[in-house]
Structures are given as C-alpha cells and as structure tokens.
Image 1 (tube, rainbow, N blue to C red):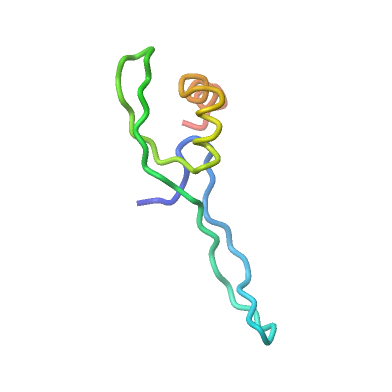
Image 2 (image 1 turned 180 degrees about the vertical axis):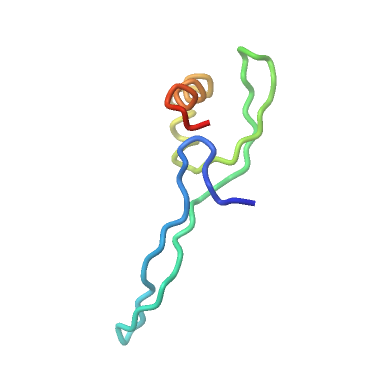
Length: 77
C-alpha cells in the first residue's frame, strides 16, 4: 500500500533526525493520509480515496467534483 495522496500526489520526504548531541541520522516524514469515502452527486456514486488532510480541506472548500476535474485536467490520473 503506497503512502501517496490520490488528489495532491503528496508523498513522504526524507530529512534528518537530530539528537541532543547534534548527531544526524536519516528519517522519513510521512504524509497524514486518511482513507475516506466521498459521494459524487453528478455520478450518483461513492468513491473511496486515500487523501491527505490538506486535500480534505480543499475538498470541503471547492467540492469533490471540482477537485476531481482539476486532477483529471492536470493529467495526474
């Protein structure tokens, strides 16, 4: 199961974990993903997406139809 947002394409990035003695070792910063069902009224069906919390805020602002159309238009799917 990949840890990538279906709408925004966000994925984990790599950075340093810094100890108290200032030693650095690599770590991963994961995306805050949630599996969520959305109702699409135009198609009259439910879809399940794995989205980040930032994508959920965008969906509640613009609507799920506009977000999906934007992703299709940009060629991310």
